[in-house]
Length: 73
Figure (cartoon, rainbow, N blue to C red):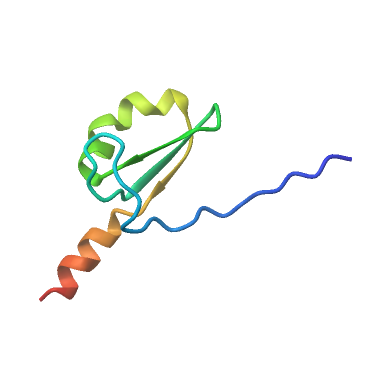
């Protein structure tokens, strides 16, 4: 019998950077081939359609952006 370990995605933090521009990443795209890409909110929106055929899962934490903005008030 083969056991499969399913890991919960770890939250993104300030160390995680967008693979396109280097800004803080708020989206993790796990690819079908096992790799992953990290994107800022802007680039996640820009590449969303093109990623659909090659992505297994998307972890979207862009809601943190609005939480930070409302905390600053």
